[in-house]
Image (tube, rainbow over all chains, first blue to last red; front, side):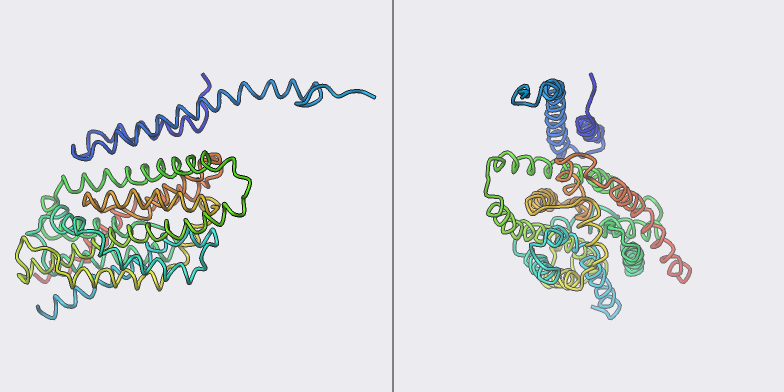
Length: 76
Length: 330
């Protein structure tokens, strides 16, 4: 799977938050969990967006070659 | 209260003034860069809310600085004086270089340096340092994630709107409130650090008992000093924060300030001294990342990160050296 830059960035942030779990005082560990969960949500969303854009691009290229999104260009 | 104590309180308030001069500019960077307020209007707006923060927040951060970083028994006039000199010197050097470093971490590093020079490494409280060190990283990360989340929420809510002019006007008004919230949060967290130092000084000199709360005159003088510092603000840093990290629109400025304000307020209530500079930088990067990662000028952001990494050791060394003459005399 080709991971996009933005999903890798948010995935990295989630890892940083989880790595800080041990040194974080127990009463504040919910902050690590909250931040890691939020980062994972955005990593997943970014990955989905990349995937959907990846599907969309080839079809746009096909339609462009056929005369644009509205269909083939009619020749006079 | 002796003349020496009064003089050190004056220096502590001078540090608070420099904190305003150096850090509080962050409160106005986004509101100036989006042209919602002129620099002069923004400075007055931020200074007012820096001062008003004492009406909203307690003194938990002050208690952390006074009791949880350095063993309170180690505090004496010379340690506090050398610590303040180290923090102010670091702030001036980084201000001169145009680096938005953290006055908060400079103060923590400087107090630690003077305390270690006085009584060795055992004078430091590991759990207090651990808490501060963890949130050096966590607070900008949370600011970044909230900034990104708020910006995406704004896109989702308003992407169908065709009245762009009206929408932008709404965001500009919203940014007045978000800038006020951020200044409130900044005033609360940063002024309390100075309150903590003055509290430690008063306890060390027997002016207050060891379990004393922060007196009202200390609260008011600390907020006045930081508000005055903001009024005389540091425009070099405004420039770095407002335009070099990423270009901002009113909606983005509002999202960044709100994210940073929420993060700092939560830390203030929990009694954690955090860097307002780091948090707003994280939030600006988060908001910029909604465009694309390349919209963030990572070179400048990286320069800022290096300044953060160097702040605690740099201030530590300066105050350690500043304390040595006192030790030689003693």
